[in-house]
Length: 125
View 1 (cartoon, one colour):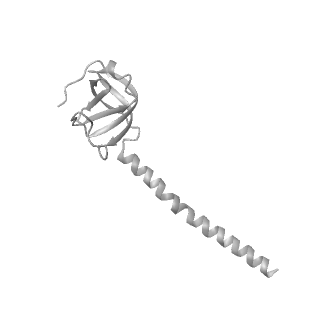
View 2: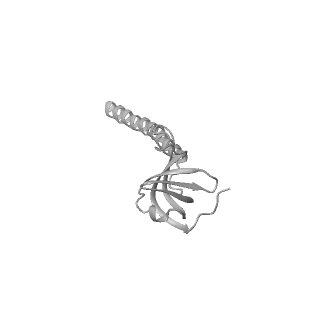
View 3: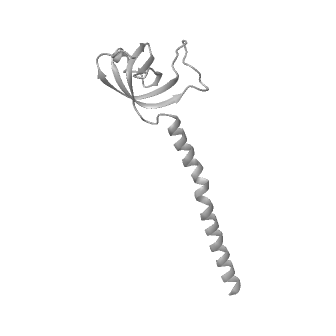
């Protein structure tokens, strides 16, 4: 009977120790994903003047920052010269480097959705 109680206590302590160790090992993954979200725009839309053609599009926002657009760009051609709001995610220039063609775009924005805000662009300051 003593052996059974000792075995049950050992098992109970082992489960408790394992349960205490699980949250910290899962926590870095949550932190890593929140850091990735803060490094990228993570779904925050961008708004600005759309330029480009032939599948190579850029958007310049009101602060003058230029984004190289990638992803679902099929509908962008009809909005060149318009102010648009684009939903998607931003990837900072890094391993991929600047876009081909010598563009000064500092970041790539992957397009998911496009909405026209105005049929023309206001001049950037």
